Length: 123
Image (cartoon, rainbow, N blue to C red; front, top):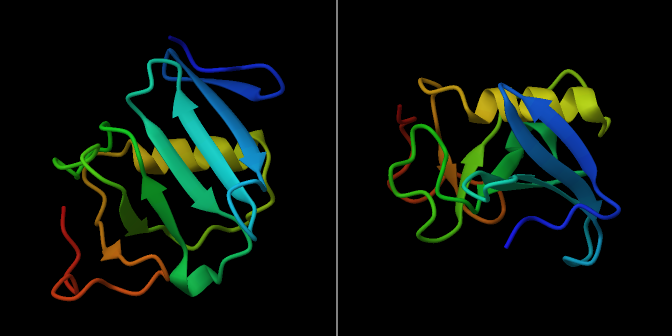
């Protein structure tokens, strides 16, 4: 079964189709969802979070640098973005960063704080 596209935005990147949307039904905060049409890449980025503690949740099994991606949600720190205005440009930057193979990764908890024993960034 494919990804539902009705009412959602499409973005082509590196020959792949990504679907993205903002959903407020996930709880008290709005969340940006980005998923590839093959469902291997799937991340969720909470909006309106403090820049110094910004993170995204890796839901899909494709995320370079995380061999255990897809087993359970993994939250990683994101870079400080120049702008977090949600639009195609921001989504493109997020996808490009996420799919970069040799980026430093810092695992964080649900609050954006480094996990116990996870102070050192991994590659």
